[in-house]
Picture 1 (cartoon, one colour):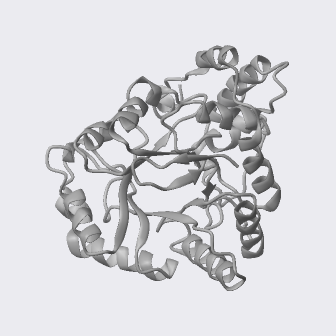
Picture 2 (cartoon, one colour):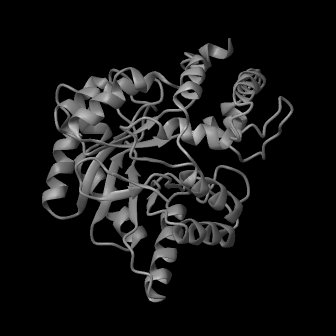
Picture 3 (cartoon, helix red, strand yellow):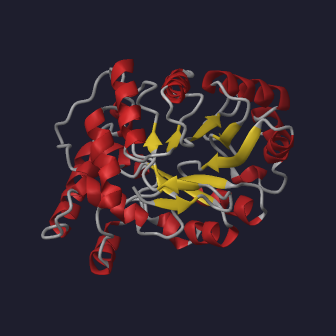
Length: 329
């Protein structure tokens, strides 16, 4: 496993992290035993960065992580494992609309109570990183929620603070980075979604902000394992993500990537992760991991040679400016 600086924090994180949404739910049936085995396998392979959230099974993901880390400490495994979690906005539009008020959606009492729940679920006195789970540029001129998080930082409840980008306006967090409001940003960046390379990633590098990349597999289609006829469990959120003709169009585009990988000795999943890691601003990428086989496969990508400049340049052509699928068109 290779390690990278996490912004200016002084912590060196594994470049392959553990995305812990699926172990909380919403991706079909998931047994806790499989989740525990997957976490242990990833940590044994050198992964030292886990990303979770309040919304991942209403705390289920956090509690499984806490159990695993507690058991590992009891077994004498004391290496530092960095756990990032997230607080969502109070009830309302997702993502927040231009008319939402920060002091309502991230109201102080609500945030304090939510942070307290995160601390209890993870069994810690201080969170390594607390991210606001979404944002809107409406609040950039007066980022009240981050003023509150800095106060919680001074109180010792938070180590680092950050934000997870809103899916449809990821560049809305650039001003936060330049203003020194965040220590870390979680961003969507993959072979289809390459827009962060235009400005966001470079600004993060300039400002010393840690970058966590999510959705590197575009919810699985960039692993190359889907066909247009793939079916998902009834409780799997991808039924909505790939609704209508979205899955077929995404699969067709993924097959063009497969063709470009001919002769590279990389699988599509390996290429998807190596593409993300090719940008020097990226601190860690957090593919979803729900079983031992996925832990082995994803963590193993770190040990592969870097993607060649020629292949990297070729893959730039797969940038897909689809916003949110343009209403299915």
